[in-house]
Structures are given as structure tokens and as C-alpha cells.
Length: 248
Length: 258
Image (cartoon, rainbow over all chains, first blue to last red):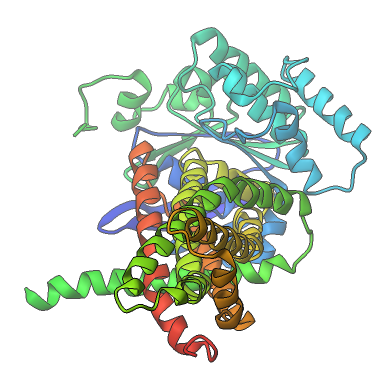
């Protein structure tokens, strides 16, 4: 269970988060949607402890991640796996080395065990036989799938996806959506997704939270969000230029 | 207006000094913390040290050659050309080679550190390290620091030898000085402490290059432009620190003013 309470963050004079309150239940897939610059990525980085808030708390299984020391934070991140928007694969390593990186740094595994984990993780994302390729040799969709394989190899309790379908064609985006559903398993893994892709949000989510101007303005199931009467949320989910949201 | 104009840059300068000192302390402390990754250090020793040998060789041989040429004709005006070997040997070992090796490495290595780490920052690879429970300072900065603390004095010693050989070659082949005269003057004047003082400076220069390059890499913002700016700043700052600190090292080191 992740409980976010009164989270505030500013950069110079720009207020990005202005009191975010959100509960993320264990075993569910929670999707945070919002427009560009609404603070989704900043909120994401606070959940995993990559950023410290100006005020507020992020409780992960009862422990406030904003208050623990550096050593505690490195233990805490063991619970998390983060799939970055760009994939963030280490470009000096092969695909196999990228996947092995996380497990080698954590477990005292033998070479054969590591190879087995690499093979299993790649087959789960439908990419067998690419362990020796470099990230530069992969397409955008393949990079995202390798990034997912790298995370699931570590078997984290919470997986966070940063814009997993951005920049992909609709078919590849759907493959990624199916992969997220498959990885979350039978409510064994807590998934947190940030996206502005509504097709993806409706398909993968148990719960959708709408972030607008640094606050969560609505939460609900995909069906509830579809039927919302909130004009701001309606404009966003219907993708209309006219409405209360003014684009500068 | 006047005070405000000074206050902001001074604040930024003080902040940068603080951050660089903290990074240096952290990176040094983490060298001795488990897990030890000798493969990373070995890799840096090769990339930053061994692969710098050709550039240090060229710099040293021509510095020794030109210094000998200029010193010989300068001393000849006073009929003191016999002391060419003394002047060249001591100048090279105490000052020129440590500083020039530092500057060459600032250009070659500090730039590569800031560019490589900066690119990792803007492509979120540094954040990815953190999410795998890996401390980016231990993984990226400490091995670079170890490599340069070892390789900078080693390259300086290599440069001392090569530059003196370059000078000796010019003394015998170009100005036709008896090579035994060059050697005997060198032997009489050059002390072991001259070489050691140069190597002590080189250790500090290595620390400067590693920490400055890594610091500006880790502070990179934006895309390609940010990486370019970080690289330029790292080279300029590392070079200025080497040049300015050289004066103070020469004053501080007890055997360098003899």
C-alpha cells in the first residue's frame, strides 16, 4: 500500500505539486493521467525517492520514504522496479548485461542462474535471442520491452511505468499494454503507470487518478472516469482543444 | 544593483565549491566500501591511463625538445650553455611535465567523464542505477577517482623520462652539445625530491580532473546542449584549478622551493 499525503514540490517559482493526496492499493494497477507538464513525472520520482518533497509524505507499507536516510532508501528501492519512458538501458552494455545488472547487484547468483533469468525474462516479453544485441540496435518498442524484462528479472513488489506507450505505433502500444497486464499477474504485483494515452489507461487500470495543476482532482475505476461529469477530466479524456483546460 | 550582481555569482560559486568538496569526500569514502568492483577500476585504468600514453608521450618529447633548444641559446648569451641539462631537467620534473600532463588529462579525460556521465544523466541511466539499488557515485565516480589517483602520477613520471630524453636528443643532435655534459649536469642538479614533488602535485591534479569531470557530468541538465556545456565547463574549470593550484603547491611543498 502506498499512501501519498499533501505532497508539495516547487522548482524556483514554479509550483509543480500542490498537495497531492492519493492511495495506491497493493496488487492493483493504478494509472495517473494528466497533460504534459502536469507534474506526473515529478510525482513518480517522489514515489520512488528520487526526489525529496518540499512538504508532505509518501508512505510505502507504512514507512515514509521522504524521511528515511540514504542507506534505508537503497534498501527501500529494492521493492520497486521502474520502467523509464526512454527505457534508460545502459548503452555500454548488451541487452543480456542490462538484465543481469539488477540481479547481479542484489543476489549472489551463479553465471548459469543469471543466464537462465535473462532467458526467462526476455521470453516473457517475447524477445528471445537478443541478449547479445546492444540497445542502439533495438527499435523503440523493443527497448521498452527490454526495459520491462530488466525490471521483472528482479521480481519487485511494485512496478512503475513512465509513459510506457508514448512514441509507439498502436499495435506495439497494445503489445505493451498486454505485457503490463501479464506482468501484474494475478494481483501479485502493484503497478503504477503514468500516461496520457487513454486507450492504454482504460485497458490496463483498476483505478485511474487524474492529476491537474499539481493536484489529484478525480479518482475512480475506468468506467467511473469514462462517465465523469468533471469538465476538466472530460476535456482531457475526450482530447478536446476547447474547454476549461487552457493550453499556453 | 551592484551588490546583487556580485551576490548571485558568489552564491553559485560557493555552492559549486561545496558540492564538489562533498562529491570528492563521498567518492573517496565509497572506494573503501563493499562491494568492490575491480573490473570497473581496471577498465578506467586502461581507458583513462594507458590510452593517454600516446598523447603524454608527444607532449613530453616536444616539450623537452623545445625547452632544451630555447634554454641552450638563452644560456649561451651568458656563456652558461653547459648548464642546459640542469635547467631543463629541473624545470621539466618540478613544473612543466606535472602541469602539462594535468592539462592534457583535463582536456582528454575530464571532458570524457563529463560527456559520458552527462549523457547518462539526460537519458535517465543514472536514475536507473539508483532504482537498481546502486549508488551512482560509487559506480561512476569512485572508479574514475581511483584510476586517476594512480595514473596521473604514473603518467607524470613517464612524461619526465620521455621529456628529458627528448631534450637530450636535441642537445646532442641539434645544438651539438656533448651528451655526457648534458647527463652530468642533469645528474648533479636533479634530485629525487624534484621528481617526487611533481608526482605529489600530479596526485592532486588527478583528483581534480576526476571530481570536476564527474561533478559537471552529474549536474548536466537538458539534452545535447547541456552535455556540451557541461563538458566545456569541466575542462575549463579543471584546467584553471590545475594552473592556479600549481603555484600554491610550489609554495607549500617543503622541497619544491629548493
